[in-house]
Length: 584
Image (cartoon, rainbow, N blue to C red; front, side, top):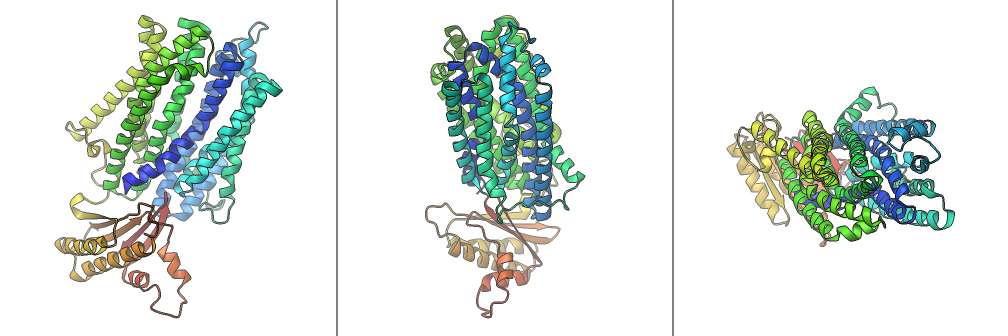
């Protein structure tokens, strides 16, 4: 089921990862074609500020994925609401402070970004300032959209994500055209167009969060400093990742300015924007890995975590490999969408083709980084971020540029990503004490996490006839583990009753690939049964409470029977899956 769930979440996560990148892509195309090289350079100088806001938004978003993933995985509704409340307050504070700082200190920020001094003959400075002033108006909506994404994924509200991103992109295209051909407001208008498009996505997303049936509630009483601290701490590896990207962009702009001038910076702006679209695939895969690893880690599900590593690695290589081949073939038309200067086009085409060769190792590094963040190996996650997005890439670009000029900078991406992946693999081999490329080795799970493999048994049910086989196999397994005949029979009965109930009422859509995952775990001589399915949302505990007063005792007899014979029952719906844990 993990692989199917990964696939289901992947498309919407990749699309949502493009939320920012699509607007940047549209802006780059319009600026490059209609506003000229100076405006394109100004856009490139502005990008670190966009990355700073993206970094802060991604930090809180990742914190939500980790903290909310754990609370929903364990059925802690109060903790989930506290996380939601904390994230709303934090993102509002970041937005207010960020807008104020950029508006008050716009000029010194432009100088710091490398746009030069505000002299009459330095047009790039004023173009950079104009873009920042237009962008900052929509920064609060930009930040809010980033934090909405994980909540919608966790609640299974994926269609709204696709709609929001689609309309945001269409809106940005229309607003850019209006700016270029009607209002003629230059780079300020381009920044403002992006702001309006973020507002569209925000309005579409916020509709879900104000509904009565929203899974997340504002709860100021349950929110405290500790919750805020946990949220920020969980997102710090992502912040380190984004800050590293900011410093890398600043440094590469400086190197390129020295070895190739404004044309090289403009070419890098094109490569960076095209690369960000490519990165949306790897970051989408990695975001799914972060959410699932957080949930499965809180559930202490070793097999699901190993399957997560396997799925993310396969998708990273397959999808990003296809993207690499596509970009290699289409590099020239892609660059021509942005630039019309022949000298800049040649540099950008060569650079894009070299850059895209780093995409597969980058995808693997990003997936491992997010996965390790989800299983609380925070230091390792941060180390990968710094090596991948700054230290090794910047060092490689600096050294290689001394020998190969501009091409050396592009080669730095391949060298940095490849060296990072090699270092991660060496660390994994060291921790395991042996050489292995298996998902189990790269999962790096603590020895005491969950139950040992020999103390659990799992079944995947796709047909009603398979329920009985699972029930009988579970009984046999429990007896072999020394569980009494009575308790073993009760576990078998629970599987049969709940399994039949799910297949009868849940397997109703022939077009949906329904499945039940059943897991029996023996820990400290006590058995626990977990039933997980991908059918429609159904909470048997709440359902039984709502029908407790029914006069007919034969109604809901299967659920009634199960709830009477178990010691405790816990239900939670996360990422669109029903999860029922029964303790005998």
